[in-house]
Image (cartoon, rainbow, N blue to C red; front, side):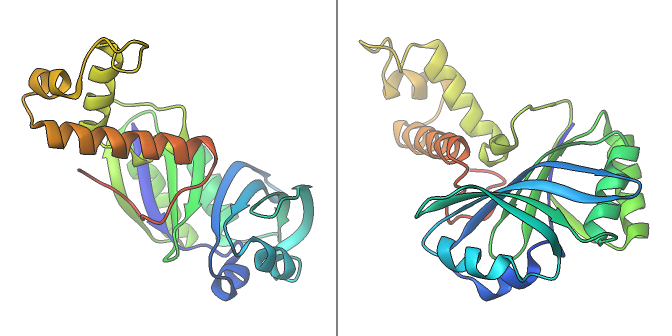
Length: 222
């Protein structure tokens, strides 16, 4: 099953509290019994420079390396301090059979996406992280789905349906094999609804492709 949940985090907490105009996507988490969390973080936005100036002094970060330097996008390798609640939560996820996809900073906290073998595994994770001291709020749960891309969490089922219909109908081909009207008719919705869902789906995919999450927090259903 595919799960997205909202939570707070010790990692980058001071830096993000003091920095505006940044979007952060964390991928490639790793840890061990005696090894603190290590991660890759992509930072984009107008506040990218301010983030860079502050993150080196963040008490949650033990070691930091700048992998890619740009005016509006920077890529970091970071090692957190040992013993954070995030480390305990990640270990709990692994013990429960969870597979981490990514985390996205949304101004009011983090949205993390993960895969679990089944509902029992996710419930076991919830129990374990409660013991670890982290509270989570599930915002999207899709039983029977196992997605490979963390960026896919912005797509609702209705958006996926429109996107699939567009692909199968040749809407993106040159010349086009179908129209918005065709897509709308096949899904029994209005052409305006088809257009809006398709544009939202394409925007979500574009943001995921460049690790830039946009200003919206979480879309559960459109």
